[in-house]
Length: 163
Image 1 (cartoon, rainbow, N blue to C red):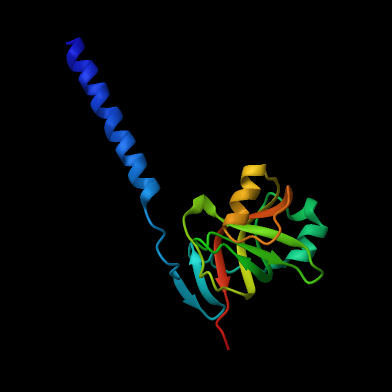
Image 2: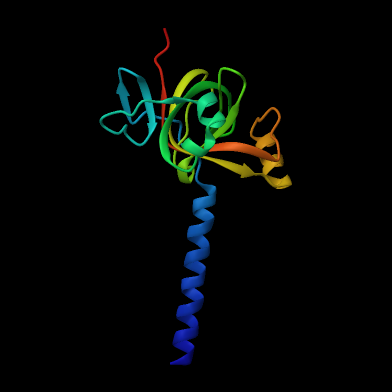
């Protein structure tokens, strides 16, 4: 009986290790919109209905006590995009305020050539980056990651149609 239990434990450990390795080896699938709306292409989850009014990023950061840690819609310009997977963008406000938008649970991405205006549905918060986080950001194409930044954990990103 002990041998059977030991063998079962060994086998289950091997299966878990194999599944974890397979997950790490998965290639990121190109960003695909989940819906097309009058507002633009939507990545991540479908938009809520009715669509909430977006707060411009500058106002959200200036009045963080009113906007942080609450699911909301934010607007700004995309000025940087992760060049490995499209799994983060930098959203910039009119006066230069920045927030790094990370895709919730790393579950989706946006096109790596995204730029211009965007609406992001998610939660704004302050984040502290470790040296390893900063190094990873640089490897992903970040221009100047800093140790402390505003973050939006996004569940949906709307990128308007070109033209």
